[in-house]
Length: 391
Image 1 (spheres, rainbow, N blue to C red):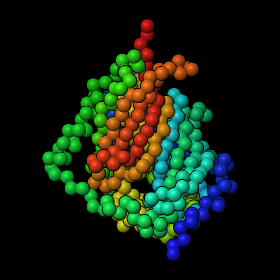
Image 2 (cartoon, rainbow, N blue to C red; image 1 turned 90 degrees about the vertical axis):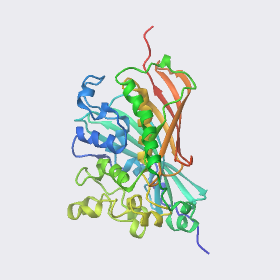
Image 3 (tube, rainbow, N blue to C red; image 1 turned 60 degrees about the horizontal axis):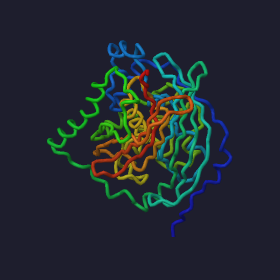
Image 4 (tube, rainbow, N blue to C red; image 1 turned 180 degrees about the vertical axis):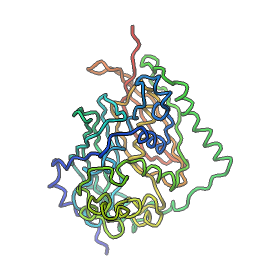
């Protein structure tokens, strides 16, 4: 009989203990931002078109709020993954974000502070005993200004039990889309894109928004190994020599086994043979891009990054708010990955209007992310600040 225990005994000694801070070697560049919005399928001209941005609120290219995760170590999952769990693998389970106002621009540098928070073990249909672990990520600009906080959740489980239980293995085949269906998908994408162009540099005023208002539908996909690879390359941590690396996240020490361990982001190996440190090829992240390794960890086929799903949600909200608004808080929970061949459909609704103690004008929005079969991939509740009209 298979032993179905999950050993989390090593985790307690890490909780609340700050990890080594992390920074990129170079300041943010224009093309870092452009590469990011391209990879996230976010055609907001404010983030890639110099001429358009020059006549807007900021007078130059500005990073989207989601770009914070692009300059983080390990998608922000590091403090939610610390500690040894034998035979384990990891998926991203959710993010809670707080944004404090300052924006990122080309020339900025980011200091990433990581502090493990807590964990709990629950029984799941996917892999039996499963550890839901959380960690805090604080993001500072080069002058010490705290501009964002992320509380990430990782899902740590035994890969052998996930394979044995096979909860997702009925989805091994990619859907086949006809030319007519693909044309319809492209047409549906224009609903959100047209909204971006129609709003332009104008303000979306709080007084003009009502409870019950629906956000335009946003469609991404069909996803592919090519699109997932493009996402991976937009995270600046994946670039050889891009960061002052440390070994806090050694996959073997964390309990990853066999082909899913390796030297991903290892600073010593990077100087010798950097290809061995690229998790897309060797190590924990290879399951995203190679169906063979996806099946090894209990997934039916190649799948996208949880951090990208969080970015899609932030972009969805921020694009609707416009350049004079901002996301101030967003709590996203991921229920299933975006698989290759699928599309992702985002919908949102304004459920509340309020002003806070700082007299900020806020709307609360519920977001739902699903695939073409209406299977829920993620849900989120967010507070978005909008400008108020002068009386």
